Image (cartoon, rainbow, N blue to C red; front, side, top):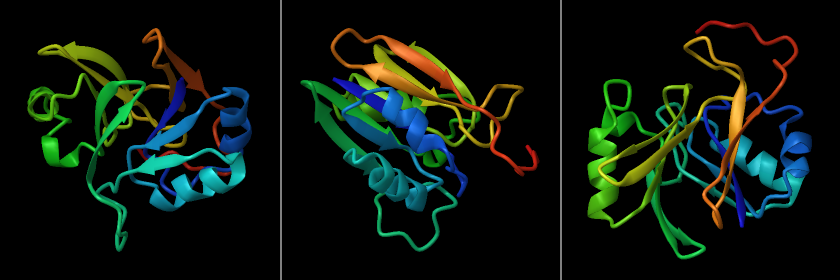
Amino acid sequence: MKIVLISDTHGYCDGLADSIKQQQADYILHMGDGVTDAYRLKRETGLPVFVVAGNNDYGTQEKEALFLILEHIPIFMTHGHRYGVHYGREQLAETALQKEAKLALYGHTHIFKDEEIAGVRLINPGSPTLPRGGGSPSYAVLDLTDGKLQRITVPVPKGLRWFF
């Protein structure tokens, strides 16, 4: 099973559906700051979507965190702003452990990251539209059967002004 991991689209998702369709994924997991984008990608790709609210998703009914089990893998997903991910990911890893999750997915920093803390794999797919830290615009595809993670870089959206 392949899942698309995406976060921090911030209203700019033109052309992403075509790229996502090429990945032949089974689900899209959106880690916030783009709840409306997540539902747009659902319409444009036909894929089921799980989404959490980020710190810029005002007025949404979505939860700030979800616990899922896909392919027998317990997954904790959140935007990350409530866990201090700019300063470290230990609190996020601890919360995932408390929920018995082996995988924690988050966004907020707009920086791609794949690491393990306290036995929990933590993945941030970066941002496909507003990357920070000198990174390229990206999302990720995770194959749950073998754990392989692929970072997908995407072209800079037309007319987008970089302000990070």
